[in-house]
Length: 374
View (cartoon, rainbow, N blue to C red):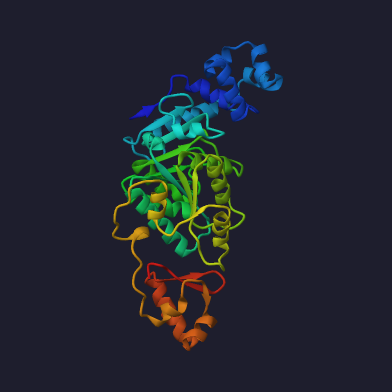
């Protein structure tokens, strides 16, 4: 069973479980002392000078629920998430040769990463893809197509295993050779949302799951913005597929920009709330992209002709009059009736048929939208 664990893992975990310490305090201690074991061997006066009296006293005490937390971590090392013994598990600590070098260029690198799958992928070239949990059908299509094309050209796709755009990005990337990396805001033994158990196992087997949170850590609201900085930090750039104005995806994009990485956004309908976040990013300087080739060219990667997906040439205009009437923005049944002269019954029957064919999406609010695959 391939497992890579540092000899001083127990000391690492105990240090990171110290109440009130935080990543900044941990980095100061490690810089001064050299290792977690040296931190615990340091004189109290030394620790007080570095992190203050309260935290120095906390370091001297056994962390709360220590035996339970350490036992949970050991069980994950033995059994993993994927259920496959041939899927490796690793613990990567700051300052070791296996630590992803691009994270060292960020302002707040994680001190430790738990990884299930191919840990080397974390250091390989990658693109982050993020977006709305409440994505439109077109947004999901775009995420899958862009991710498949990006992965086919050798960039792993990094996302957060969330509902909506994240899941579609992972699914699309699994079709390509570079695969995908899912960064979790929980312990790797706590898949959130739970409906993504199967997807998580696929990612672990054909890419990597990663988290800075110890096994057993539940989904807490404050953990997800922290998770997002790792998604942005691992990648050479971040693509926002769909996002509302108040969106965690915009936080990820900001973190990418602060780390000196490229930010890309896919434009959408001016009437769609899920496009307003992308439009705001474009106004702020994000690069508008219409195909995976736009991203690859910006990242100075070779672009090869593609037979479909996000790199495909536009298809000729469809002769179907209803598709022509739909256009590419969301539209009501009444508006379609005015454009076509068809009755509501005729339109409803035809739209249902096209929806089942995957050519039209039914949106909240009684709206319909043509999908680009049509």
